[in-house]
Length: 273
Image (cartoon, rainbow, N blue to C red; front, side, top):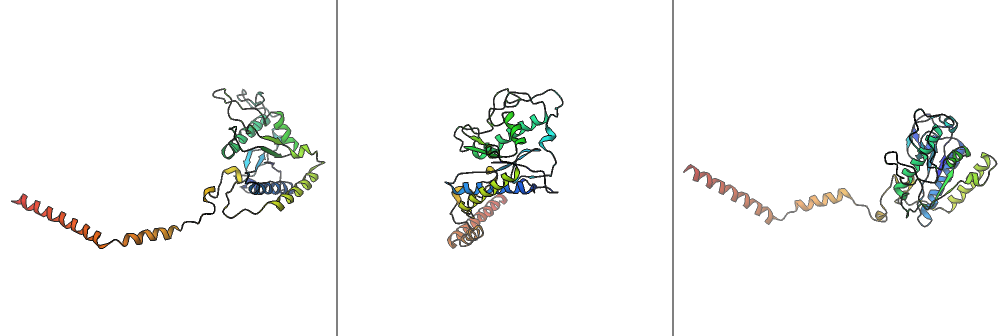
C-alpha cells in the first residue's frame, strides 16, 4: 500500500511514518497499519505500506529522513538541464523534474517490492497495490505509465525488472469512489480502519514481522513457538563438563609430559657423552 505524504511535518528527522503530522495523514497511516495487521491474521497473507513522497519517491515507513518542503507543484513543468538520458516506461524521454520524480517512483517500487514479494518473478505473491494519494500524485504517475510497462536499462538498452509483479493489479480508492473532498476521504478511512481493527487479532509477541516489506524481521518463521536458548546456562554447562574431566585422562596427560621430559633428558646426556 502506498500512502501519500503531507505538508505538515515535524521539525526534526523522524521515521517516515512519524514525519507527517496532519490529521489526514495520521488517518491514512492508521488505515494502512490496520490493513497490515489484518493481513497477518487473514490466512497469514503478507502486507506492507510505504509513503509516496514528492521529495524521495518511495519511502519505507520506518526509514528515517530529514524534513523537507517539496511538493508535486514544485516539480511540474521545470525542465532538466542537459540532454535527456532516461526514458519513462511509456517510452517518452525524461525532460522535467516531474518526469524524473515519476521515474524514481517506478524504480523505488521495483526495489521496495522485489525483495520480499519477488516483484520480478511470475510467481510473486503480491496481487494488489493500493494507492491512497491525491489526484495530483496519481495523475502524474498514471500519465507516465508508472504502474505498467518496464524501464529500460541505460547501460544495455534492455528491459529490466518490472516495477510491479506481473499478476498484480493497482487500485486507487480515492479516485474510484469520487469522494467530494478530503473530509469524505477521512470519514471513509476512519470507518475502514475501525472495521479492520475489529477483525484483526493482535500480533503474537514472537510473530514474524512484515512491516516495511521485509526490511526488518523479528525472527524467522521456523523459530516460532520454539523455546529460547539460555546462552549463559549453556556456556556454564560446557565449562562444568570441561572441569569434570576424569582423573584417568589427566593422569594420561601427565604421563605423556613426564615421558617427553625423560626422553629429552636422555637425549641431552647422550650428546654430552
